[in-house]
Length: 235
Image 1 (cartoon, rainbow, N blue to C red):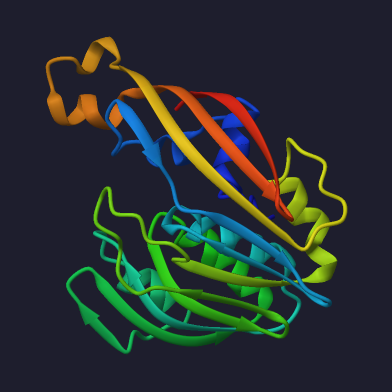
Image 2: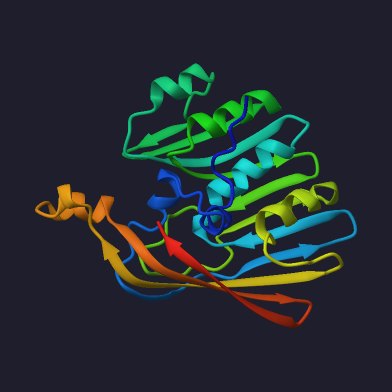
C-alpha cells in the first residue's frame, strides 16, 4: 500500500499533523522572517501545471506516484549521503555514473515499481526528470545553498482529472472552483526555537531536534484577487 507520506507539508502543519518529514523541512531555520519561493498553479484545457521551490520535490513525486497509469521514464541524479547502490540494484537500476554522493540514473519502470521507488528513496534528493503519458516533472540539477531562493526549481504537469486532488493538497483553506492561475507565497515567521531538555548541552543535536515555533503567512492570489491567511507553526 502506497503510504504517500510526502504530501504537502504546509497542509500537515495546518492540520497539526507534524511528523519527522515536516520537521526536517525547518531544521535549517533560525529565528526571523523567511520569504519562500512562489508556488504557482496554472490550469490549462487538459492539464494542470505546478511550479514550485526546492522544498516541494518530494511532494510532487508523491503526487505523481498517486496519479500515473503508464510506464514512467526517469532521468537525472539522486543525491544522498547514504550508499544506495544495493538498493538501486534491487530495483534493477545500474547507475550510469556514481560521483561521491551523486548517482546518475536513466530508467523506465511501470507505475507500481515507480510507487515503490518513490517510497524507498524518499529520504534522498531526487533531482530527476520524469515522463509518463500526460505527466511530467522537471527539476533543476543542483541543491540550492541554504538561504538562497530558486524560483521554479521544480515544474510538474498533471492531467486535468487530478485537479480535485491538487486543490485538496494545496488549496485546503480556500474556495477555488473556477480559476486559471493561482500564486501562493509563504512567509515563515519563526519567533522561538524550543530545544528539548536532553539536547541542551549538544549544539548539533539541539539544532536537529529543536522545534521552530511561530507563524506561516499564506498570501494567495487567484486570477489577480489576493487573500491572506495565517496559521500557527510548530515543527
